[in-house]
Length: 58
Image 1 (tube, rainbow, N blue to C red):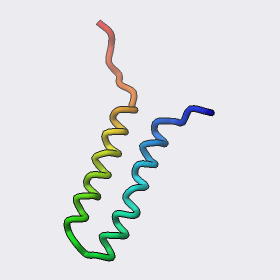
Image 2: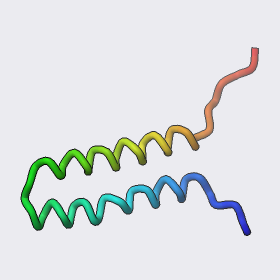
Image 3: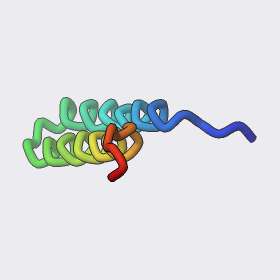
């Protein structure tokens, strides 16, 4: 099984926005917006964890 690109996994995490946005549109509740924020935080943390750092060794 081939290893998947970490950046692609991060983009796939953003697909979680679609069902949350659909549910928020149907219910109109603002509490669902917290789920949108949670999905964005998860995707951003995955992006930061998988990005390459440019630190120099001492």
